[in-house]
Image 1: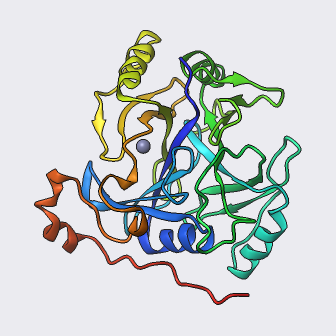
Image 2: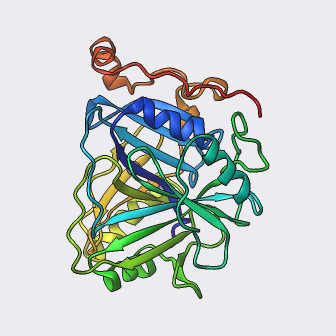
Length: 311
Ligand code: ZN
């Protein structure tokens, strides 16, 4: 079996407003859904992506006010790379300067230009110039389309058992190694995974700024059942199918410690609100709708990121 690549990346955060101000306000992604963590409904689950939250463009967060920072070590996704148009890196450097976001080292390592920043919780986000763009509905509301983020370029895993993790990517998920040592799912968005050997490093401690899991794409519910059988045959223990409203999911750990998910491409984020107003209101699944008033009392208010004056 072969996945089409990364579906989404989910990370922990502390303050929901600060998270929204960065991903919507600075990076210019669209907040395509504000809902709650279905496994912990007193906290938000925020989804950002292109205009519709296409698979391969989605970053999601569990922001928990007051959550302490985690510690990156072995068994996590330690960097998320987002694809930007070729030639857009200098414009991003200037934009980060305007927003007082410190820009670190050059990203890449494979000859492509790019830069690395930390989100407000310390999660490393790389912006990499990428020609691998397959039809995202780029969200140009805050950042012009000439520099807008296209979607997830790839991720870097820190593995406690790098050769085992490489086997998972190659044999379980059907990714192909390339000349740079990356594992590729073709040229699509979210099609690049790099493994760093972190054997001997302390285990990752979950907290703000730490990636919780990464999800790979499945085309359908039927294929997802095949994925569950497939990874079980390789020795994984997948969870039963979980209904996440906008996709269904199975989860399993790989031997290097990283929590993986297989998520379906559909039904997507227009399931319960129209394209024009995606992300503007709190959406709840039917089984939580009856608790809306109570949940509202638990959740802090969440406003749109400030609009900036044109330069
Ligand atoms: Zn997920």
